[in-house]
Image 1 (cartoon, rainbow, N blue to C red):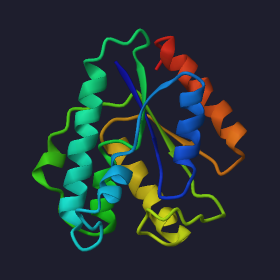
Image 2 (cartoon, rainbow, N blue to C red):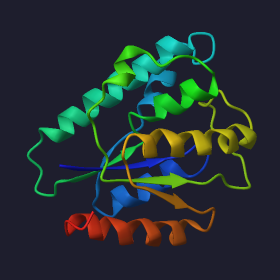
Image 3 (cartoon, helix red, strand yellow):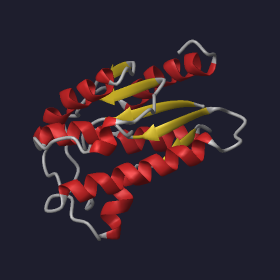
Image 4 (cartoon, helix red, strand yellow):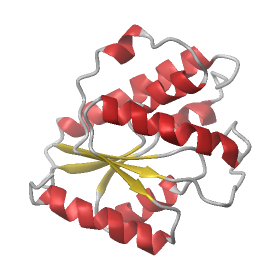
Length: 178
């Protein structure tokens, strides 16, 4: 199975891109953090370590299910990936937990969405401004490149331009060039 990751800070357009790709027939794995926040059991700020661990475990489980699914198309797109936790630990200046140090998951390609000039409150996120996304972007780049992933930076252009860029790479991935 080829895993592709679309990542970036909060409110950079990941969900918009993921939803459009899903409507175009791509298999996707939804973002784990949103589901954990909606459950309301762990606060992302006051219990950051537990929150990050829950995100990791749910994302890991979702990716494993996809790995063992018998899909005709072996390409799956993840809304965020396992290495996002490394970037968040770097941002909050906390040491990496052991479970993050032994991941063997590889992403064929990672699309890092650069922050937009707008910020939309979605009622879910605990971050409240685009400065957080701007600070997180280089940390995400570092996290994925250090794990050996090819990272493609997606500029803050229109949704259709972003989709065209991403789908060009996805077509290459389907044809085994990535």
